[in-house]
Length: 137
Image 1 (spheres, one colour):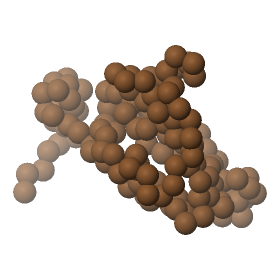
Image 2 (cartoon, helix red, strand yellow):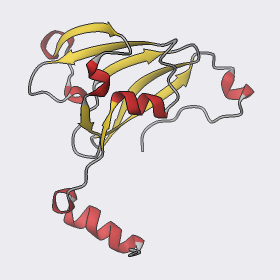
Image 3 (cartoon, helix red, strand yellow):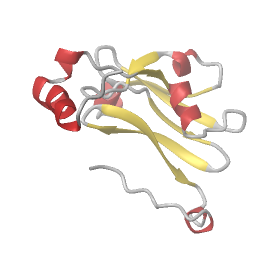
């Protein structure tokens, strides 16, 4: 097993660039929603399909960039479509979801995408002694 120093890893990622080391994080919306605790049995998901050749996170105009906005169920194939969640381009599908406890939505930082959420009942931040949301870097 090889152990790389943090300085060497910094060199690889930030100096050489991700193209040189072929970094990717392939995932699905279903996997990411499960990872943040989304309740598929009691939840609802709204999905927005973007026009061809546009990354979902790059859509900025509902009239020009979005084809349709619709509810999808737990069997919809968009939940299992693979995408690269790594840095470079916001590829996660456009969605907003809710279950009995939280509201979920995509977030991006430098093209890397992940799922953010907030409690519907803000008292939960006191009751569960959790940090309030504070996204971005």
